[in-house]
Image (cartoon, rainbow, N blue to C red; front, side, top):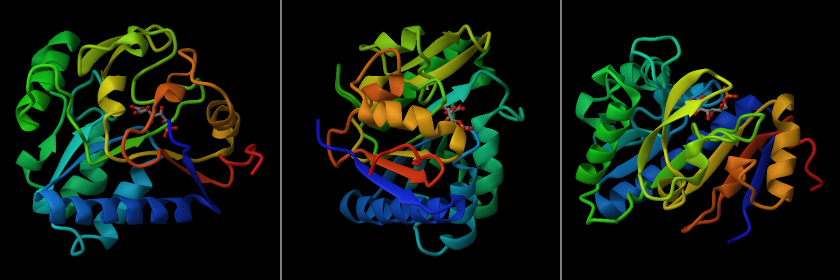
Length: 246
Ligand code: 6PG
């Protein structure tokens, strides 16, 4: 496993600036090389400022018609729920840039039950990436967040998703939340060309240190994320990186 790149920015504003530059350079490279850019977005609150910056500053710098947006995970809620990762990104990025519906690949939580939504997403992944049996999708970029308990996407400690090695997309019951989450699995995440954790805030400093400085462990699912292509990148603000001895 290659050594991760640790990038610490002085504040959340600089963090979102660097994240946008990274997103854009990966997009321009992928579109030039392969005619399209497939990105797996992270949810939660941290990346919202990145998405808003892309909408505000990169409208004319990226050929958005060639960008395909997937979601690394989703809450099992309606797409218009305040809890929905899709709704968060739609408000911050898709609507402001007028992203076409066929470029947006959301989890269809309207399908009635979590397993059906996950199975539907898996079929869609196989179709979009034109996968041979047993093959894995390869995103050009996977953005990930980090929870204070060491979860990433919706792969929470002690949940079935931690040990999933066959399926691409699953419904994952999260006892501590008393809810189902939908998530890409580690084999998919670890097959990405470029993977970037974007983490901010003092509250994440300890878990960042434990994951970066410690061994991979199922107790901290984010520590099981590895990079196959380019080095894994940890993009942190000073607060989240405060406990790293670097
Ligand atoms: C989600 C995310 C999740 C998130 C972390 C960090 O659906 O919430 O995918 O993995 O990235 O929980 O969330 P914050 O950025 O809100 O701290």
